[in-house]
View 1 (cartoon, rainbow, N blue to C red):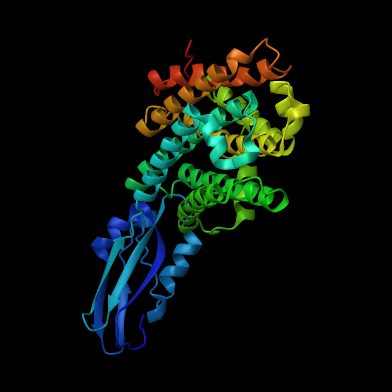
View 2 (cartoon, one colour):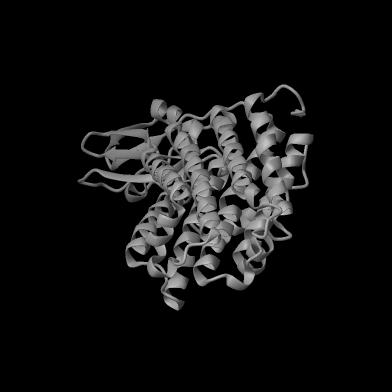
Length: 393
């Protein structure tokens, strides 16, 4: 395969499967010929090392073969560089940097603690004069928001571990990036709509949370687009979510059944909070007539986080139960953190139960969180991979 003559070094990036990148480094060669360079690769059955075509140099076959024959699983970007002057080519793994996920994890963790410890101060910072007078609705809502930010921090840490190990191309982590992208879009969209219709958010708070949400969206969205054949197509992502939901009925024992139930329950709760903030908050906290616009916005943010982050995490745990790989350290940390946050959720709402500050839905809305806390804690402490399923009790 020949290419037109060139007088400068060019670099292009194509998709190669993650497990073939190291092999490509060993076998890729570019030899000087009269009309230019050519790229060759040695193949071994299905484990063929397909060298990405250098489009700028006219090499199309490798790229076309990769797109035609290689699925989206276990892909990672390889950078193929060629120079006519040097007559050589190299293939290097374009690694994902874990630093953006690590930074977001730390920021969300610190922010979550601050909001949980000082909910009224958080209300003053975000809503300014509209936050007064402070009541238990603000306190409970902000404490729950702080807890959910801890879950977001955990999910970013989960993705950071995957980036450090070169696993962001795996289905589980592509789903993680998609979920965090939707979470960020929710955190950007809801306050923006609220600000345009009823500007109750202070400009400073809007700038801070807008910048944080934009950073999350760019980090997770870029990670998803980089490792997905459809790129950052939101319709394709929604289609993949729909496909995942069709798998909820495919369970293999108690653990997968529990997390299948949790997935459906929390996605349902999240969308109920998001689209029906008045009835759901009133049903839980018994104060629907006194709900202000800031209360509705907070409740919708809680619902968006439950639907886009906690629900997908539960689905990931369902997959782990079916595949018997609970003992992987990042998943155990994710489960342990989910257990702690769920327990704190129950602890936050428990003092309101059977008081005039509780609604008829409070107990039933808290029950799945308590169950999730207990089940995740027991499985995280002692996972059993070698059995078809594990009964934690």
